[in-house]
Image (cartoon, one colour):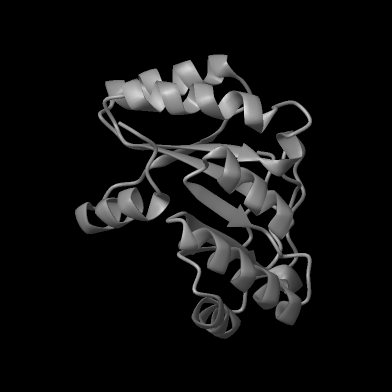
Length: 183
């Protein structure tokens, strides 16, 4: 199968009541293991490469290998940018062939997050790429192995989340509800 966008697998999972594993990918050995496990369970899979890992993973080099392996997989495969912090990073991932992107403007003001996320959505949707965004601040840090607990003032406000989704047109929203990265 070729890479597909996250909306396709997430909508199917929602309709049929199951979850889809999403795994950070940092090398080809991880890729092989993740795909073998997904195929063994007959489950779609979401492969993620976080912007913080770009120092270890050259996305221009690894994406063709991922596309090749996905084309041979017997299950649907999504390749997603995880926690892209700039619109430029989103564009880079799309140009490389990612089928889904996450723009993380959670450290920006609400209005600036809306503005930049909307731009990322406009660019990605024009080429059939799904978009996730983040609102509120999740504790810990992406790419870390330490625990930091989120404080309530960083939790996502439900009314603000509704407004954010309406104004940006994102396909999915990551919210802060006390969860933490790096576990």
